[in-house]
Amino acid sequence: MYLSYGRQWISDDDINEVVKVLKSDWLSQGPMVERFENSVAEYVGAKYAVAFSNGTAALHAAMYAAGLKAGDKGLTVPMTFAATSNSMLYVGAEPVFADITLETCCLDPKEVESKMTGDVKVIVPVSFAAYPVDIGAFRAIADKWNAVLIEDGCQALGAERNGVKVGCEADMTAFSFHPVKPITTGEGGMVTTNNPDYAKSMKLFRTHGITKDAKEYEFAENASFGWYGEMQQLGYNYRLTDIQCVLGLSQMKKLPEFMERRRELASLYFKKLDGTPHLRLQPYHEGHGWHLFMIFVDPDKRLGLFNHLKENGLGVQVHYVPVHLQPYYRRQFGYKEGMFPKTEAMYQSEISIPLFPAMSDSDVDRVVDLIKNYLEQV
Ligand SMILES: *Cc1c(COP(=O)(O)O)cnc(C)c1O
Image (tube, rainbow, N blue to C red):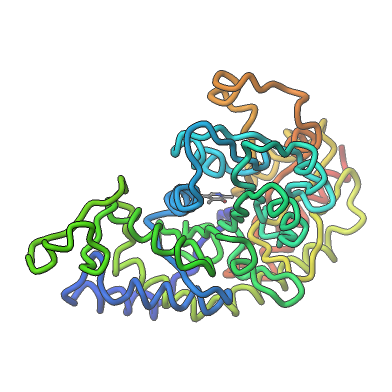
C-alpha cells in the first residue's frame, strides 16, 4: 500500500453532512459559512474568523487587511511554501526574508530584529510543520516598529504553546484546509483575529469589496433600493462554499482525535528511529501539531534514501525548496545561494516521512524498517 507523507481522513459522517447541504437551498454562501467560522474561532480562542476559498487567499486577505501595499515590505522566512511571500506580492509589496533557527526550523526572532527597517509593515512567522512558533518573541519587535504580526498557521491548526492554541496570539493567523492539512474542506482557508476592523475588511475583500449592509453605504440615499449593493474597495471572489463549510464543521468535531493520533504516531517515530546512523529528527515541542514528520539525513545520503523510500511505496516529500532560490525570486530580487545558510542547510538534509491520523502502528514499523535498513548499510 502506498503511504503518502500526509492525507485526509474522510468518514461516512462527513459524507452524510455534505449530502444534506447538496440537497438544501444553499450551495455557495449560506448558513454553514458562519457556523464553520464560529467553530474554528471558538476552538482557537479568537473573537473572529473569516473563511476563504483557500489558505493562499486567506494570506492575501490578511496582507490586505493589514494595509500592506506597494512601496512597503513584508518580512518572512524563506523556509516555507511560496504562498507565504507570494501573498505580499499580490498587494504590490516586496517580500524580504530572515533565516530560521535550527532549534525550531522556524523564523528566528534575532534574525528578524537585525533585518527590521521602517518600511517593513508586516512580520510573518510560519508555524512550520505545526511547530507552534513563539508569537511572544515577535510581539516586542512588531510593536517597536509598528508592524502587523501575521502568523502563517496554514499547517498548524490544533498546535498549541503553553495551553494556548495557534490562532489567537498574532494580529491575524491564516489556516489552510488542503487535504494534507490538519482538517480538510478539499480546498479552503480561514483567518482568525481579535480585531473587528480586520475581520470586517477581510469579509469585504472576500466578496469583490461589495457590501449589502445599508448601514455601511457611502450613498445612504440608495439604502431603500432592494437591488442596491455598494462596491467600496477592490476585492475578489474568495468565497468558501456551504458544501465545503459543512465538511469543515464535521472535520472540526474530529480534530482533537486527529491531533491525539498525530502525537501518538510522532512519539512512536521518536522512539523507534532513535539512534539510527546519519539521522536527526525534527525539533520536539509538547504542543507540536505534527503536520509533518521531518527527518534530517547527512546531505550526501539524502537523495539515495529519498529514492529508496519512493521505490518502496512511500510518498515522501522534501519541504521545501527555499523560496528565495526559486527562479522567480532569484530573477525579481537577485537572491542566490548562501544568503540564508540555515534554511539552505535544512533543505539539503530534509525528508518528510508519512504521518497522518489514519496511519496504523504497523505502517510506522514499515517506514522505520525501510529507513533503518538503508541507513545502516550505507
Ligand atoms: C498549505 C500552505 C499554504 C497555502 O494554503 P493553500 O490552502 O494550499 O492555498 C500557505 N502557507 C503554508 C505554510 C502552507 O503549508
